[in-house]
Length: 137
Length: 329
Image (cartoon, helix red, strand yellow):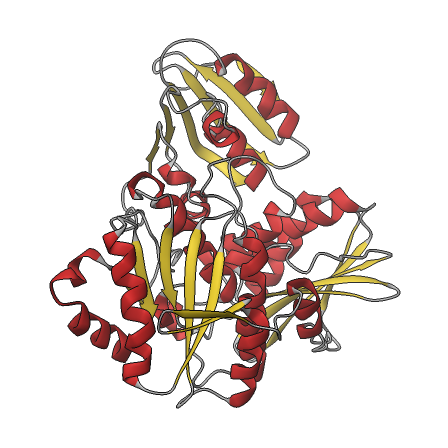
């Protein structure tokens, strides 16, 4: 699903557009040094129709700020800001590395409305939730 | 802001018998159910049995958790309370959520008792924006008198049965928390691995990968340590011109990573305890580090500040028995 044309590449982080499904493939390290590049690549998905698919199998490191930017690519944070969000377009994260799936669970973003997390086969399953979405750990 | 927000209630219940426990806990939970509020009981197995029997038919409407596993460490406990409140927002008629929360005290080290007591003070601040009504039971029969005395300082209100009374001993949470932070940090031994961190986060991550490997910390656990360490580095870099000395070493059962930032000073005693949200907040990265590690201690003095992380070493058999990332566990 990875296209040939990189929309960002600084040697540490490489982001390419994908057409089918529409979205991005990310390879490399995301931290404050590459954050602006990530934001720039995500920008074109902030508005418009349809789902956004992000292939993360090549992400070797991603800090919390970077993960937040990806989760909020279609404006999922608008609801949290009280901007009347909640009808955001679906974001699908593919091949999420286990440590990032763990971070999503720790911070609770895995239950963000409109977000689907697709982990590689054989990785730890989704957590069990209580009736009110509680988690004990 | 929702009218029900910003009204965190935090009350201590000092009890001497099973019947005194039930006198307070039962109406608290039953009244919540009658009001259509989500109700969570977090306590020890004996009290969970007492509550289940006393609630009878209504017991199926209460959420339960055994205290020892509902947040194994104070930062995770705060996050678990917050998560429950957030998850319950769609199902509370009144806007409020009730939590009965009795920590485990027996068998804890002095360091742990201080951390859990400190958390009781921190809840008043870190959960202030929630609409949680929380009662924290303390069993006089099994709890050290010093812990009971501190409970009167970390809760603004005491409750017995349905009678509430303000606690004159209640202490300013920040002052109380700072007074808890007197234990000196572990000192790096001779031979500790050292890295001079001047802001190069990739270099810092390479250092910690090598250091983790040298101490037998591998796989998922090493990945999580790298995350925690890199977030601490990013925080220091965001606050000051990073010039921290990073040292790692192994002590019984744990790998320690110590950041020393000359000229730095951290005054917020609750930094790293406020749950991260989709909306960015101060210290989010430290919050993540605090969730990942068993300990994150922060100290400031005249010359600078230190942030010290501690994670279980490769000798930890609890994690070894459960391969794969144990977050949450």
